[in-house]
Length: 196
Length: 165
Image (tube, rainbow over all chains, first blue to last red; front, side):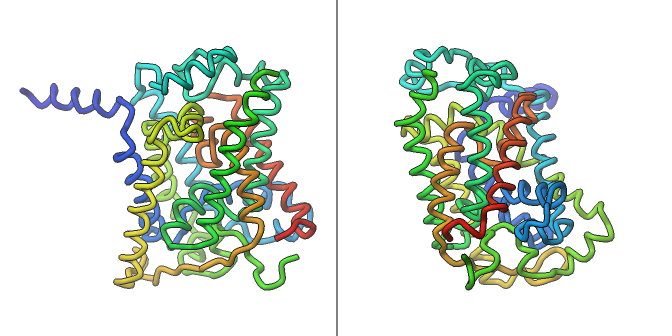
C-alpha cells in the first residue's frame, strides 16, 4: 500500500466521530498545556466576564479589574471558534449523528427529526427566535448559562475539569449542582418547553 | 455578602497574582497566539468528540449514553494526573516560572449558580466554551445565545452583593 492511500485512510478515520477515550484525554491535556504555556487555569466561562469588563463595566465592582491580563482567554475561545469551523469543513463527518433510539422517539414527538447538525435545527434557528419555545431555549438558556456559571465561579471546564483535577471540594459540589440542574431540566421541564 | 473571600472566581487567576507571563503579555500581544492555537485544537476535539452536540447532552442527562461521562471522566483523570505530576516534581512553565494553584473556598454560589447553569446547559446543549464552538460550526443564531450569556453574566455582576454566597 502506498503512502497516499494510507494518508487518505487516516483522514477518513479522523472524519469519523471520535470516541470518548480519544476526546476526553485530549481535553484533559488542556490542563497541563495551559499551565505550562503560561501558568493559566483552564476555564472558559470567565471569558463572558472579561467581555463585560471590556465592553460594559458600568462601574460595577465585579467588572472593575484589569481584564487585559486575561486576554489570553479570549484568544483561546477565538481559537475554539476557528477549530470548530475547520472541523465542519475540512474534517466534516458526512453522516448524521448516531443518537440513542429512545431519545429519537421522544424528540420526534416534538418535531425534532434532523440529525445532520450538532444542534436541533428544527427548533433552534433564526426564525425560532420569534417563537416562545425558541426564546426560552436560546435566549433564556443562554442567560442561565452566563448567570449560573459566574455565580458558581466556573463552568464545566473551570470546575468539572480544572477544579476536579486539582481535587477542589467546591468544584465537586458545583459539578453535582450542574448535574442536578441538568437532570431536572431535561427530565421534568424540557417536555413542557418543547410542547409550547 | 462575601467578606472572607474576595475572588470567588475559579477561573480568573490574575485576580490572585501577577505572574511574569502576564506582564510580558501586556507588551507583546503575539504571546497570546499560543492560546489561539490551543483553542483551535480544543475546538476540533469539541466537534469531533461531539461534546458540543445538543443531542449528546440530552443523552447524558437521560443516562442514555456513556459518551459524555466517558469524556468528562477521562479528561479529569488525565488532568488530575498532570496536576499531581506538576506539583510532585515542581514543574515550571516554559518561561521558567513556578506553576501556582490558588485553592478556593466553598460558598453557596456553587450550589445556586451550579443549578442555574445546569438548567441552561440542558437547554442550550452547551456550556460557555462549546457555545463559541457551536457558533464556529456555522450556526449563526448562536451569537444571540452568546449575547444572552454575556447579559446573564452582567446581571450576576450587577446583583452580586445582594445574592447569597
